[in-house]
Length: 449
Image 1 (cartoon, rainbow, N blue to C red):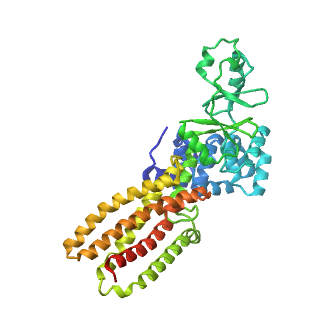
Image 2: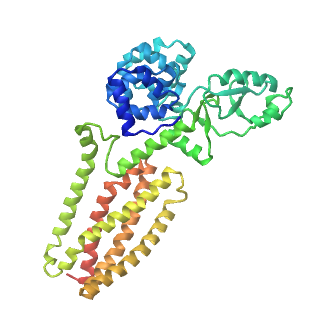
Image 3: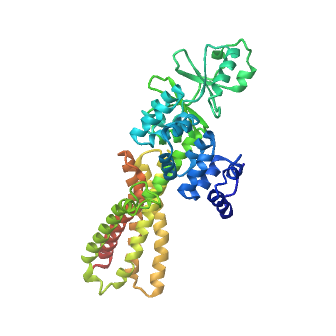
């Protein structure tokens, strides 16, 4: 059951907590989706959140803990004993359980692992903790339904029922050989239509998309998006089926990557949130602000070399902010398109073809804008030669900015560096400097000062 998170609801919850009305709170959250409960907890004080957590049953608590804000979960876990945490871990799928364990201090991890009653569950969690969190192995869950190609259809159904008890949602049925090597997938329709005496080898589909444990999480997201998969099997280096990744985990990866790219584009060098300390926020923002300062100094030095012309050609000075702004905007537009294409694996072909296309696009845009600018300067009473110089400079600046905005993210991607950096102050600052330099250089050639 979904509930609307309103101010009145939160006030009611706080009042019930104040008066220790646990029964009323339990009734309030009965049949409420764990995501809605998590949203309520995020709006409450820490002590109030802990009070509600202790009222919920282990299964609900486990689900809620996976949905609450990271800071809230960390504080809640600090308040729970190792045994209480282990009880929640027992209710979680292995991938979520491993995520919770990974957030604990090393000493605390050992205490919790010792309290987990299901030894098989504990072993699987330990196995997942060995993988990098940003790899397919770090994302996968061990719970899945698999059948042997040599089983009969009748025997297969019995085995599937036993496995399905441990799986929250069955997206696919995977087929393996005697060594556990992934062979294909089994259609439920084909299974129902087949003779009970048939072998699975006669009815399964040998085509199945899979990833290896060491594949990057971003690559897994691209594959699942491209083929519209709700789940994908994970194999080890030998092709042995070891787990599966479901769409909910990939959505989290996509969101985290989008958040990181957005922050990089805004000039923030590390993952931070609004609630982080002033020092942490300063460390994340200051490097790019410093780069902007250096860029401003560079622009000053360029303009200083042309200061003798300002008295006779003041109009050039007045249009300097426009030229710098257009260079920065065009560069950001070009780089944003390329970065988005790289993220979606849509950028194909050679770099030269991309640069040529961007140059033609920038030339067309620059020409249209230059005509408008020339007309404005001419109507405003400016001299033809100066209006022509400013307009030509605008065209060249836009072309160069487009080429830089296209080349830099492609270059960074080839070097294994996140190209999202190119959409932030880095590209804006570099284009500002190049734009001003080109502007005055072309103006000097045309006007002859």
